[in-house]
View 1 (cartoon, one colour):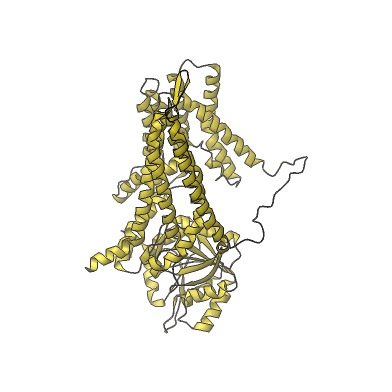
View 2 (tube, rainbow, N blue to C red):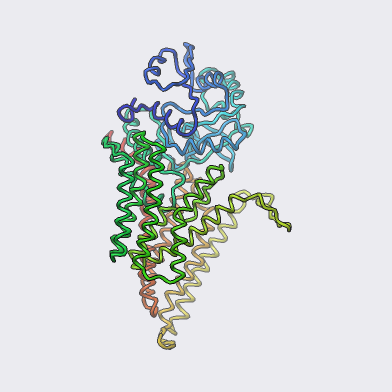
Length: 594
């Protein structure tokens, strides 16, 4: 069955596995179906089950594991998933000694949760699995790592339950010995395909998986939050319509747009120049995305794109310098540092990666190309493009220094002992149930304090509202301080209430999960978002009363009110989106039957 013309479910998952570093792949099937797999020509190792008797999925997994030998990944043949799920599983498997490792999705839809293999957890330990369990904690996504001891549990389950046994029987035997681990993949895309309607939905999920797989772990902050959301949609649009544009041509277009932006800055068109530079930054991602989608990647294209990027970066710096000329000695020096940083940042990560030094934390420093070009847009739009030079010079220097620290980490010795504090919780660790009483007390007490605080600020300050404190050139009315004091009280005690109510939300979610049939994670996050929403609504309401503050009042309102409004809109979107995803399939089936 195909997800798109020429791409079957199996061929897609084989490609996902191979691109994740898994090269040796076996398919367990009956001899009757061997010819079908040979036609697909995926160079797969075939494991044939010749038993005529009916059997469950454990028996086929057991027969495959006997021939291939663990450790290995066991993947359901009717599941599709994004590459990051496999990546997280492989990373966890390298650091775990358990017999089985499961992938846990804490926020499945209602229908998926009902059909999936549920997991029961005790802190970080899997204690039981089964499709009949209540989906309190979440479900497995169809990727299981089988360690060296897994074959022993499979064999024991087949002996006890027969050929009709399922995978959960072997996993539960291992769970009884605390031999099952899990990796959290909540939020990552996957789909179990059992019915024609599932296949229809999977074809939509497939393209979203393709788009998400285009995002690279090395992407900077702006690229993850803004650039990729645009560039991946452009690339996927071209791919879905079969419109192949050579990646080198896209790299050249991105370069030309960046040069036009750089030239616009000294001409005085700051906003246009900043926008063109940001567009070039977005297009810079399209070339690699198109190359990966159309299987047209090449080392030549990578070098070509890298050279053009460095020339474009220096041209942008030169354009800012020309627009800000003449420069002071300090500004000239920082411009040279910024130009050097445009090259050194990428060179630092490249050289460290060649030495197999982990650079993920280094990339969190906002000095990558996407952030640098975005800073040019912001500063140019504000009319001060030279400020972006300051930002680029400072962050690039921090980035390079941090890179040198990574390079020499562990090779330097200190002449004095360094005190260390044990990085663990105090023993014994108290269970959630034992602390609930204290949390309820904290919520009640802080709610009482919040009420008293609001009464005090309202009752005590109101009689003095007409007093004016004159300190030339500012005249400050006590009445203008009233909303500011109330906001302070709300923020201080409200934050304590929100923090303390986290455990209560956990308790409530465990009670509601059986009634709503949703995982505790979905319910807990819904409760938390609702609390934050109410808190944001209160802040938004009070923010308008701050306009009475002298000088800064109007500016505070113009900054605080939009920010809280955006937070409110975002929280409402999260609430609606979460509930829609959870109940969508059930609602669609309900509507279709009526």
